[in-house]
Image (cartoon, rainbow over all chains, first blue to last red; front, side, top):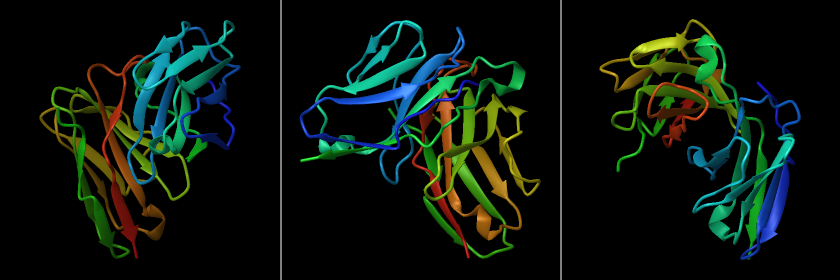
Length: 114
Length: 116
């Protein structure tokens, strides 16, 4: 599976856009980019995923570069409740039995301050 | 609708005892996953089920760990002869059909296991 690189921490003022970068320079053509977040003491929460095109849902937008080597998760109006660890994951269409697993790295600790 | 539930939410046990952790996936989800998260660490994959079968057990850290799933529903993760290094949050997730790149995994709140 392609590895991802994220900054260990970022902060953002409440009400501002939070832009979280992820580098996945070894991504292959059939691998998706997924974003999850984990609020303290809770299980991870799915945010968004994409393959090539930019995606938007009620939580966030995902911008994937044309070469697919990096992406940015955008929280358009960050709130205090968005403080969490954000994980960028490249999901491999693995052979046989490795299809299921998600590979979580260390993620980015986003702190939203008032 | 109801999400993934796990029980117990917290478990304290003595070294050497066996523990069973339970996961109830979202109804109708055919794929179920177990992960472990040690304090301050990322998630570590343990095992996943497709229906009642476990095609990938490679993440289980030792033969003290086992898991089963029945009725394509509830799963139990069993740790025998617990050790202090087994202390962690054990997370369960489920997804709606055959595991694959587009399937979104939905996580439960986890079971916090502390081995004294």
